[in-house]
Image (tube, rainbow, N blue to C red; front, side, top):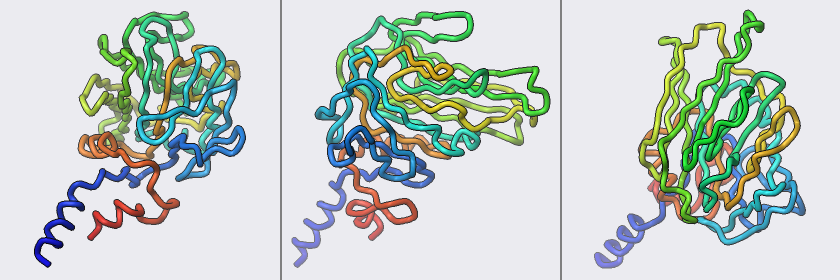
Length: 280
């Protein structure tokens, strides 16, 4: 009996980490069973995506993933409902695998007529002044609009990494976190790559500067600029998630260590399997 109990405890401790579900808004694991024709199931929220071009389902970091050829492939994730309005504090994360270390490409992006702009670009960043290259770097951008005086336009906070060793064709965990600090009238951005902090930025925001709902669909694997796509991603993308709050450093590690395919129940319920075991 004692031996059985010890073995049970050992098995419990050895269980893979479950995905963090507190604040989870949408989750696309890209596993085979979550595709219906060109529809990509959001297994947690209500934001099913639509395949564009011809991305392929391939073995991924966890289960399956999507492979993008850099020439027209992307996923339309819709405008994510009112998530853009709530983007005052959020987390985006994904696993990526690429060997393209020179050509500008976009991991995820949405861009309205002026505001809002939000996205992650690799090997450079493209704005109204043109394309600014940054080989082997990642740029994270988040914009805000002046609600009281729209003539002031957009203010965008960009965080750029240094040169990164993530372009060697191996899987890497990318996490982008924005935290809005109302009392301090500022916003802070944090980035993690494979659980390691890789950059942060701060923007001063008085009360009149705010986030607005996305007016154009979010594109995964391409830049969406006023309804037109470019900057196509070349490589693989897996385990894409949005949260409506900043994840902690420990939660970033927990998701990094999660190696089980999708195992969470519909929103409002506890995680199944590993979540139930951990609760005991």
